[in-house]
Length: 107
Image (cartoon, helix red, strand yellow):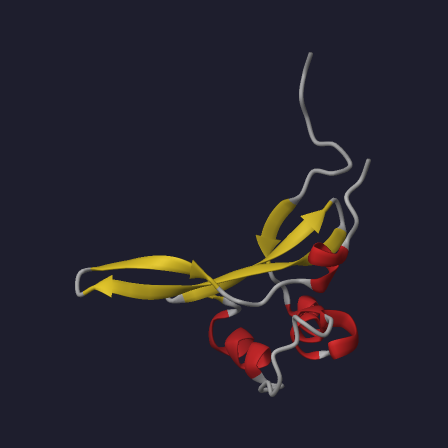
């Protein structure tokens, strides 16, 4: 028996500039993010500024797209947090993809 990718296999990839509208809608648009995932006022240029600075991947945090084959399901992101003067850990950021959290489990 061999195992390989199935229809439910998800992967991560680097974000590209064409992903910015989806990222923005998942974090800013209440119709897409849902009432409990939309955190109120939000800087509408935040993701574009991060893209211009480091293409959403840097030493202090980053963002990767969650993919199922060619379908963008959402994203994961994290931030670097110091815990001592000489160490740090990576903390998941609070944004969640409404499309990932609302989807019904498959039988």
